[in-house]
Image 1 (cartoon, one colour):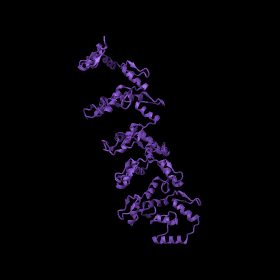
Image 2 (tube, rainbow, N blue to C red):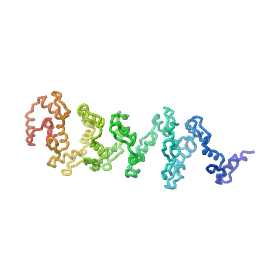
Image 3 (cartoon, rainbow, N blue to C red):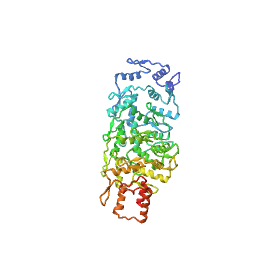
Image 4 (tube, helix red, strand yellow):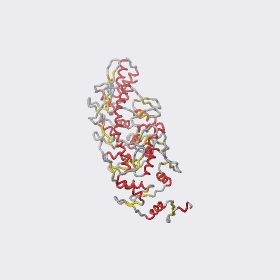
Length: 554
């Protein structure tokens, strides 16, 4: 008998079968008949073998187990699929992109991504999907009611598979192991993410700036830089965010209390990771370094921003003048120059600030109970942060680590270097509304405006002496302090100001005699302002400290 004579053909779809029982089972798919029913839950099946497997759910039996990890399964096919997690074999590959898969079903799902078809849609919001299981997962978004809970900690989940993964935390099971360093992981995605550490591959690249990343999630977070849209908004305070993850972190402000406290300054945080980041402020530790120049930082994000100085990347631009910046904070500070908006007001002293971060930093100055664990061993002045102490010490040591790359002038503070650089760029965004004279700094404009006024606005609470500028009052106040910081090496006399010490050494210990030209200049100067010559101890006049300083240096 020929082989074709043994074939049984379906009269509806013409599909052929060699086994008569298979042919009969196939016919049920057209008729829709389910002749086999469960006597426990009345669920019906087309085949008796499916009913037999189903009954194991009620009895709790799992007849098939993995001979490697002893995990039990209801179906024999499930064991075969599970074993691929141990062998890591991926026999099925896509003929378009050559991506490999462990299961044939996963390959079939993957191929749909190339065709672009999405035959399954949500009957509530009409969103379409390429896979039916994705529709079922999506529908939970509309119901919002988690139905499954962990039997150990009662945490609730929306999907059964999520419960299974979560249970590994309690059991300690980590089935996915790296074959290079033998580190094990709870989830397969964790292993795949970890493997990049060994290979160094950057498989995910941005289609806008071509920057590459090791992880898909890092690429997703990076793409937010290129968009100005804030699609995700908080339902409570209406604040909007670019990414869903940022919104999730923000909502914890409204729904949760700060559970983690710093044992040094008692500041509280929502997340333990935020507390760990904060503690670096007190320890002074800088665990992250730039791979190019070896500069160290307290946060990983600071390294990312710093790297832009080497790459030249400037993803943030000003909407007014189109100037580009590598740091979002720098762009916001720059925009405040144009607007002049100081909408963030201190509730204690009513001082206005352009940025919320500036206001937060300022409010700390009013807190009486905050700890200052770092103190200067020379003048005993105390500080909240170790970085502030290090910055302060430069006053005593005279160290100036920041230098201008144009004229090589050095400064003890990075902010002072930034102010100095504007003298080279010529940028003067602040102008006087009376005489239209322009200035590079807001403080310069504020000082200039006192030229148009006659009355000194600032008075010393100790001696009632008046000054036109607040900065001069601050310098003057140092003469009333008891802790003089600068001492003369010759006679051990102490001074509150460095300039006072320099003048003391110049006029007392060097025996410098004034020339006729210098004497005449000083006489003309004292006559022109019709007041007594400046005191060599505090060197402060209500007229002009700059002119006095220039005169004394002649």
